[in-house]
Length: 72
Length: 362
Image (cartoon, rainbow over all chains, first blue to last red; front, side):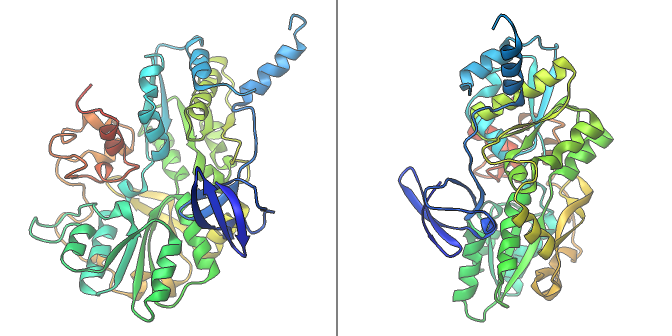
């Protein structure tokens, strides 16, 4: 869900038009700002979501191999 | 670059697969995604996807469910619990109250909740009357409860804790050969909290291909592709196919709350027995419902702790049989009138397979 507003340890979060208040207590050592995406479980934000393209180490491995190949 | 589910499927079909490969998942969320997306039918037929121990409700000791029911009935506490605990039946006579739902029907104050924060709200509003929060869950659910305790709870809120850790049961399965599988899909939300590194033992100690997966078809197929290619290339490593939220260390704040408020102890898994260092116990005895109120889990009665007659939930949980190989599945045991916990919980393999349309021994 995307963070819309932060008040202390609570955040208003939104996903697909649904809004709810979640606790940021478990992410208090992270720098969470409005606009960030967080993973929610049982009312608590448990991790900040980051953008990652590769879904498996093999993708990176194959990319490196392809780059090294003279025929690539 | 990032592949679509269709592209991952093509890549898997293009692999030189051995005649039979068994991949176990240990997360009800994974099993739900796999079943609802129909991934089994889309994968090559030599790949078997085995649902393993991924349902905390299914392994919650029968004694603990009985204790929760009795606290609500006999001690007149307000009992709050995650919704899918309410319909788990215990082994008492048909005339007696057999579930939290039945206890509620005869007047006990039982309230289903979806978040530990609701338990706190109920306790704060209740003034002085006693609230007991019956907690079942793996690390992902137990950590928010630890956060709640670390933040401070009122004196009228007690915890009846049946939290469990996932890795010790997988370690036991691998050490004893209780389940036969060739590769592991590690649970994405557990790894979000505890860190992917917690699963390195599967690779280091058992030389088994392992990948952490998320809950989309893309992430699950990426993880399956990864473990299959690890098997084929004989290059075992711990892959992270859910890098959007999983890192090596996990959520250190959450882990600190767990350490501050709970300790790990040997714990009973329903129908399976004691699994070493697999249970959470509260550090503060003042918050522990078992120590502050009558511990009904210890009251001797017939068939305490056992599975219902004919119920193979424990074998399903261990990945020894598929849900539809239990002789009760879909006959006397359905989501409408469940006999075993695997047919009750949204994370139970039986419930998931039934919802997914597997209605007989296919």
